[in-house]
Structure formats: structure tokens, C-alpha cells
Image 1 (tube, helix red, strand yellow):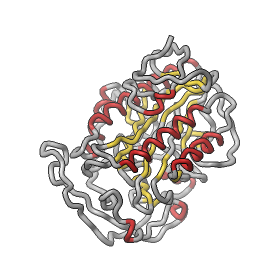
Image 2 (cartoon, rainbow, N blue to C red):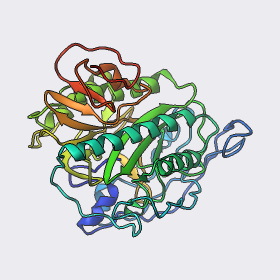
Image 3 (cartoon, rainbow, N blue to C red):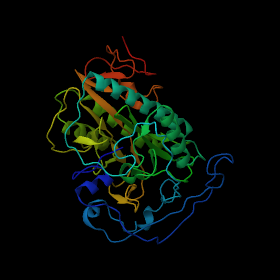
Length: 403
């Protein structure tokens, strides 16, 4: 789950600086696509449809920095044959058994104060981070397997919640600053923090599934953009460029690496492929706290700071086909591209080790691009890949370590 832009963390975290960013607006038009159907037995039912909602209104405080809610230009209303996304029906929060250990915000829904300090770990804490990262990766693999045409994003949330609870963990997004669901599902033009609802996935869609679990006092955070059915070449290229940019950013990480080099690396690849880089939402420290320092920007920047041995953090680039400006929905979470063109995101939790970083959220099934760039080197954790800037590259097909 991403952090925020240059002035802070992700959207809800602006509340820690004295303002809750919820824009007031009114519906001005609705549209329904033709042929939005799914398998008769799929969640959400057959002949499910989406409606287009455009809102506008006054903005106050930090909301000025969170995007313009003016109606988009008419020529941008459709992309890839889809109308703009609209908020669907959100079901009730799912139950968490009392025996599940919860983060401090779980019951109250408050927003923890932002801690700008980085998170480093001793050996015991590193072991816990590996377990949390491994579970997050397993859950994400499962979520991808059920993200099919005709399925609702709420269905994905239900199944993800159930799996996390069955493994004795807590779904970190649930009630974080009031977030109502257990996973983020960001569909098509949604940049990040999409709230699962009764929206039905359609053939040709893409959906970023962002999973974070809280296990034994530690958070593991990961996401990737899933291709739903037959995706166009343009959208497929977007997703590949996003994956490749994360892979390249991971490749340059090691103790002493300037954090600003991560953004420069991602931005260079986006420029080469002619995609935009979203600047507002950033990577962050993760571990005992869900979000902390450092701020990891995915664009060129002049930030100070270097990576430190034993530190854990995320890199989670968001690339766009069109403009990188966003519109913030009235729910205070959902950020969509202003021009309606599609966007992709991917994310890993990383541990800084000697000579590189360890990917704590590597897919056990080898489902994702960055696994193709794991360096063959000695790794005895049994739970994740060791990644280094040294040595030769080798294709990896499963989360088995090299001895």
C-alpha cells in the first residue's frame, strides 16, 4: 500500500497533519457500457454493468494538492472501450476473530502518527519480516488466480480476507484510517487505493491487487497488476514497463545506495517506453509500522538519504499511459487518472543486505517479472530470494533458494 507525494504519505495520512482530505461533489452524469457480461455463476452475476460518475466541488486544505475534481474532457471519457470507473456498492467490513493479533489502529480506525525514522531490524525481527513477506506473497498469488472476468473486486476481498485470517494474520489495510476493506483493488485508470465493491471485472481489464498482512507484529506489503483475460498490446506494454522499472530499481539497491537513485532509475525506463510516472504516491519504510520513513519517490528527485543495512522498505512504481494528474474520489482513498487513461503499479517489500537487497515478498510460484532478474547467489533463508547487484542473471521459476 503506497505512501504519498512530496508533502507526506498516502492520502489518508494527511490527517496526521491536520486535515482529512474528503472532497464534496455531486454526480453530474452516468453512463452504462454495452456487453458487460460475465459467466452466469460468477460473483456479481451475468450482465453486470458499470456506470460513469463525474464529481466536482470545492476543496479545502490539503485536498488542493490531491487532484482536481472538475469533469474531464469529453474526448477522454472512454479508453480501451470502457467508460470511466464509478463507485460501486461496498459491503460491510469483514469479521476478524479476537484471537488474531491486531495492529494498534485496527479497532479504532485512527491514523497512526507518521514516523519519519527508517525501520531496521535485528535477526529475530528479520525472521518475522520474512514470514510476513512470504505470507503476503502467497496471498497475492492466490488473489491473482481468482481475478477473472465476471468476478467482482468484493469477491477478491472476501477470499483474500479469509486466507489471511486462516493463516493467523491481520489484513493491514482493514480500518487503517477507516479503510473499509482488507485489500486494495485498483482497476484500469485507478492509480491506487481502490476500495473493493460490486464492480465486475471484464475481459481486457487490468487490476492492481495490493496485499499487506500483519503477522507476529510485522507488516509485509506487496502488489502487482493482474491482466484480466485478453488485454490489448498497449496495456500489456504498460504493465511490462512497470514491472521492468521495479526490477531495475531493485537491481541498483544495496547499502549506501542514494534513495534518489531509485526514482531516477524508474523514471529513465518510463521515459524510454514513453509512459508517465505518478509523483504523488511513493514507496515507504515498512516493518513493525505499516508506513514510515524513508519516502521513496519513483520519479527524478534530489532527496537525501541512503539505504542502510538491515532496513526494510517498499518500492512501488505507478506508470501511466497518459497524463499523471489524478482525481481523488469523495471516499478519500480512490485516486484515478484525470484523463481516464490506464495505469499500472507493482510493489515489493525489500530488506537491505550485504551487496544488495532481499525480496521478502517474492512470489512462491514465480508469477512476477522481477523474479526473472534474481541473481544466483548463496541464500539460506528458505523463504525468499537474495537479490544482489553482483553476479550474472538467471531466470527463476519458483521461490526456491540457491545453495
